[in-house]
Length: 438
Ligand code: NDP
Image 1 (cartoon, rainbow, N blue to C red):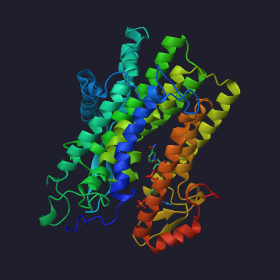
Image 2 (image 1 turned 90 degrees about the horizontal axis):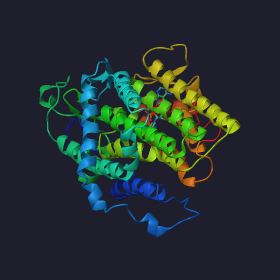
Image 3 (image 1 turned 30 degrees about the vertical axis):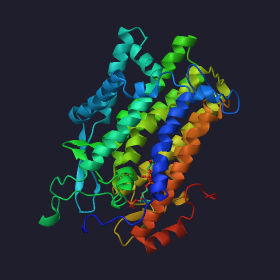
Image 4 (image 1 turned 120 degrees about the horizontal axis):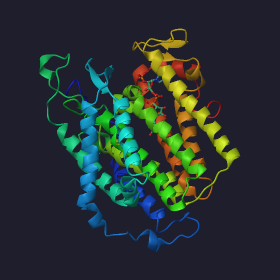
């Protein structure tokens, strides 16, 4: 057994059964979203429920899986962004200290990538006088792109799993015998192929300058989500002759969230996804398939349903959006600044591990005020669709359970890491997410 990579003893997500259910269940959910809301058929689940229509695909699934044109576009999108990720200018930032004392350096160039994409879109908009065939193509092939992104996630995470066994690694500070050993995720080294493939065996897979995890987290999926939303707005404009206030509100709020992620990518370097989780099917599928094809459900619904919110409701949703986004950003920024040595006036607990735990300001209110802001913001996206179809509220439900599960995983990690200091911390900050409630 290696000192650097101890064997993982505990399995999360209900072990192999849970992991297999998620592996096959979530892709089915994405396909179901398409079957429940598309140009030919829509159901609210309570009315107009037609199982036969739901189970009827516009073409045989095997043809979709083997669609060479969509595969080509998808691979061009993924590989093109990977190349841009490596060549576009940015600045370098160190990540958190790894188990062996080393730190990885990341190229932070979200602003270059976003500007590049926006310039391409704007120039296409001008040359085609607003009728963007690419967006219309994307809109009319959502099912094909969904299926192919799922297949790609399967293939890519399998490749990354196999790659984790190749002992190639940039030198670190350890003694010579372990110098070439890769760092594996603390939770993804059970030895069980299915579980480790799902959770992610290697902590930070890299191909030369390309950091696979950071790239997948912020580029192909997030930006595809943006394009899908724009394609829905574009479709509404083509079919309705105007764009509704609900569609504008949703696009604005989700674009802010997307660009906030892409432009403030150094904030991701301290997130659990980067510091703790391995890159396995869970993250790969989440980043590449779940984000674009389930987070765009509301826009897809609005593309087919003319929802006019009116000024009072639009303003009310906007106020909730601004407030929750502020809570989300202010709390995340505060922790990040504090961890970088800024804000020394805030109260904190000094731990034996050497890191300090904030117990003041946002971080005195609850243990995860950022989750609260993030969840409330997600609710505003659902509210923008009105109350006509409960499927649109799936996202808040899903995201609420994700954050709850994440909080529990984080608590286990922190309890183990900080021991008695964590108990002291819990006494000072007793609420986990929502003050006075939980
Ligand atoms: P947190 O930002 O809450 O980070 C938790 C970590 O921060 C802990 O493991 C601990 O790490 C450290 N920490 C905990 N309490 C304190 C404290 N009081 N003072 C200082 N450090 C503390 O969680 P995440 O990384 O999960 O989430 C970051 C953001 O990303 C959140 O806003 C979340 O909502 C969002 N998110 C969004 C997702 C999406 O799909 N849209 C998915 C997941 C997250 P250490 O070991 O360093 O002490």
